[in-house]
Image (cartoon, rainbow, N blue to C red; front, side, top):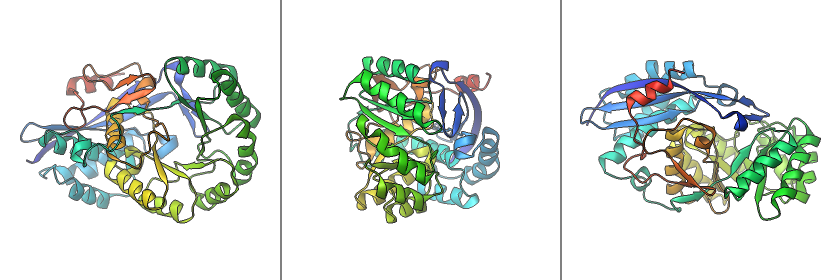
Length: 372
């Protein structure tokens, strides 16, 4: 089997107004993503999604399109798509970083490789280590406290047992947002906060103890991504567990966080880490250090979400019972695939069980998403 074509599609998705995410990293009201379609000579096609968000990962839609067209596509044409490791090694050699673009290629390759074996990707990667119905949390941005309270009540009524809140820029309003929600949902709903690196080390050490009355599960990425030493200092002084997210894109960053004991948990996911295989390697290293992993999100559409589901199913150190995951992107969009959309129910996501990523996409409907 050989790759005969790589087609790259730009898509435009609107976030539902009531769920627009505002955080210390900025506002996410629309998604200008890139879809990769790899075509083979035996009729199999693989799909991948680059969930590029400029103010979060630094990748843009135009930059991703150029990286995929000019640098990655030439590496792929004529090659065996089942040589996923070799192809991704060669793609890594063409350019640094560009994690979400590289992840889209790897998704498409794994999609083909698993289809060729007539297996879901999680089976291709060694079988399910977690349930195929996975508990998730709902993420609420920097909303007015009363609005956040109302959203939380609605989501708990829909079956969610875990909620995440963005905090950072306004300490008193942030604290009130969490206080009102805890009072509204009661003691048994899991809550955590995410600053997206919005605090200094001193602010984090000062603010985290103020949340103790609200029985939080953990605090996510309290300080900027580049300050791993600062993250370690916060953890050493924190009465609540600390999760690293933006601090860990690459393997070496995971090694730094683990060596410096900077986190109690690491958030991984295919886009951020440059693919499912790198996410699994980070999870393996974390497990050796006694550190759990969690699945984060960049508000993926259904295709990227399918890849996240496959990772969550295949990776034992993604401790889904302990840390309900952020596999939730499709809930924020009105548009869904015509067939085979990701299934959610009562605060859970279902891992697609079809061959490959389990998606049933057509080129025509992907092109329609670029017409907005």
